[in-house]
Image (cartoon, rainbow, N blue to C red; front, side, top):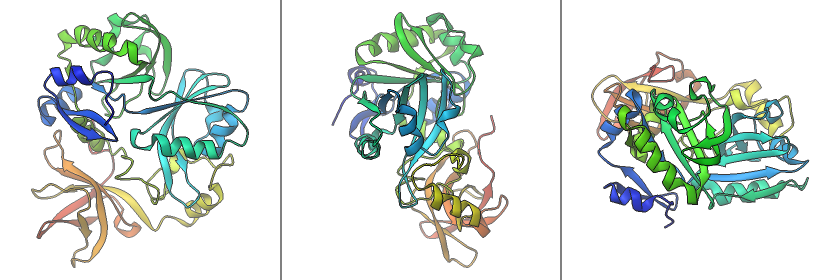
Length: 360
């Protein structure tokens, strides 16, 4: 089990630690509902240093990224980031990721913790153009400072105008007394904020200064349990639950980051699938009655026939009702459609809704 550079701090703060993607990670401190509300209403800080970072450089860096990712990275300019995924050659998804253009011929790919080795091996196997690749995952830490008060709370720590930063832009600048930190206006919560990439040796200083600067704004450390409820309220996919090696990106609603203006792995097959229309779709649903949908629960029709499976589910802290994601045949996917979720012996009625669940 690997530790992040902040594991001792989390333990000292009384965090409940759990194994996650091979790392010892804080799942909660005070409790998921309190932490969730902190991020929705003010500001919280997550240690997500388990995520992977690959540096792709050299004259062929863009060619490699264009080949292995679905989105069009040629549209990126310095200081811009892009959500994308790595299609496999069988119609599924190797991983979803964010691509950052740091400079001409210099890109950072940020991948999921559980997929670091798999992604590295996959990208390397397609690096026929000899782009330069470095795995920085063990050298770098990542903090997510999330919530509507994040910019105001963190402004004293940097010369960058945080309020002026647009979503999916970033700057390499000073932060909390450290130079050359990546300050990225990205996140996985839907409540705004920033992600801070720094070296492992720098993260403790940054963590302490973040908590100090945010004290007047009610900042709290937040665990992975609240990260999951926050992302689910936004309808964001979690790799391993909602998307994986066998799920189609078209079915998963990732057509918006699938750009057929360029050639990439399995593009031809995905273009045909998009043209014909997906046979099933990833939907969001709300329970009409009390209950909590969970991963792998059956989705059934009015006659009790299984039509799909819940991929993610929880009791929404913001909405006070059971919500979830799951794949169903396209005829059941229209918002307003009625389905049922098999919660133990009870088929609980639910309604398909247009994502996100949380409207802010």
